[in-house]
Length: 483
Image 1: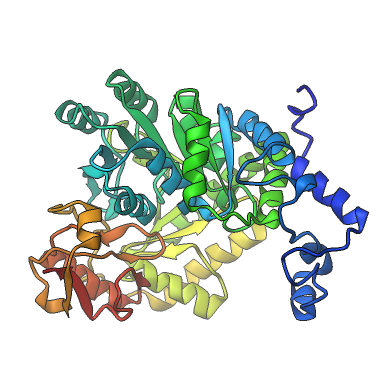
Image 2: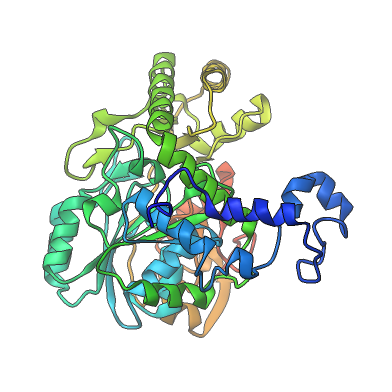
């Protein structure tokens, strides 16, 4: 066991290296047979990569029921994150979030949560029939963004719904805003409820200094962690972490309901290697990330017109804490929507940022960034301010619209429905999602009443060039509503 807990090890990676050296003749899947059957793929990805794109076998363990190298890697991950258990997820953090919710509640159970959640949370409610009890976050009127859940709001929701099974918290939001997670955990536990944390954007909380508290350290019961975002692993690889109060066998069963039986060893080895890197060097890595973000904030605010917000917005209420690695920038004061600045950065300056919404952009600063890229971004934003600035008159700013929930997401999604022109759906109940992606927070979710404000928002987001997703009609000219 002592060797298992050595964070210098990467058991899956080591087993794959041994397997490659053994030169085993493949009469199993995948059919490209270490790249020989698809030379174009091998040339594109590289021989070393395709040679370890292999199937589960005894020397390499099995993701659905790990007993050797994957299990050893899970133990190391749990130790590194300070959790009781860690599960390798190869379906992205969407899969981790859904497994977390499906593990914690069932059909008819109530789940207390903020409405500004990622669509994966509400997708899970469509799957299991749980009933959302929304704590509607406040909106920062200047920035137009939704904030965290106030402690008092969660307390009231728990008191009014003592039969709820769990509470879900964003830690942090896409914009870096955190709720009082430790306080909420105590509230929920005292009421006999589990606490789930969506930490898609909080991997670094476990390894950096001077950052908001992580879910596991706060005493939360489950957390979904996007290692591929700030942790450096390959896209679509994540961890699901659990605490002492959650039965790991039950969680594994739930994961196996939806996760592939053909787990990608490319994704799993990337999780293994990245966990080792963060366990050994995470403190220094995220100190540098924090420095780059703080430097960029200062330089962008010197330009004028932009507001790159930071810890100064913390009020210990709706904004209990702030993630200083997040470079979120308000753009409306230069007369441009965030999505317009996003498009200009990409089209005119060959800079790809994470997303732009109606009033803000997010440039993701992480493990792979250097000062020269940050300076290039700052310079481009300066040129955009000088060359494209215009009047802000008539611009919408609010990113969050409080929902009017009429029926459960599952009932609405599977109900009889009809497709109507968008302008004719006022006051009807939606049976589908509408969202800007990223960030993937629904403007409209199944079971919610369609208001004029929502219709105006959708039309404005389309006009500004936001990437709208969710409805059956890809052009979003029609919406499906309950009959």
